[in-house]
Image (cartoon, rainbow, N blue to C red):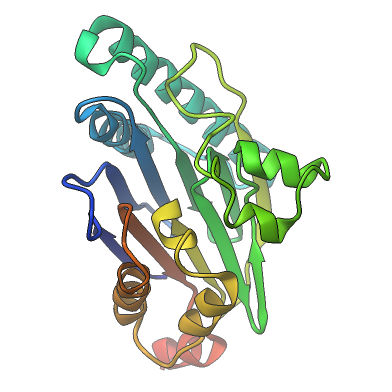
Length: 254
């Protein structure tokens, strides 16, 4: 699997409170994570860094992560729940971190399926041939209003409370994690990102850029640049995963 990661503080923020990682394992397994921290004086980057580091440790210490989608979802939910408690306990024990939290979106590829788990409004998308699908649903006030018919999706794009989350990692002692599994095929691409990207680049543009002929690293660079060109008011983080096409697989075997 090809991978790329790019994070940027943007054009306005003094600090980058996003964090991310791509961790490889045996048998082509990959865990990708994006976190967008929030909180008082630098506490956001503490929360996001803690979350990524703890998930990395859990991944490296895992002896045997099951292949079945249901078991993989259970494993990911369990790890994120444990991280939630760790971040919450740290915020309670350190006054300067009180109230901190972070979004989290994870994608775990087992060699057969992609399992996605998330809390907050960092997103995961799948590009399959000409189909571009958002695999996560934002845990945000505005998305809840859209879901219940209170406002339209178009109105949501410019709503003044767009960034208010209904769920975050580390802000409460208990949290409910969403996890789902998806089949992947050769040539599929996965995008994980913070809202610093999706608030500035719409889905049509995201799809176009992912379908371009450039390398995966160039795609990540161009996505971040597009968000900055449109204002760059927030931190921007992009993680890309790409399964080799059938042609590339054939070339590897030659």
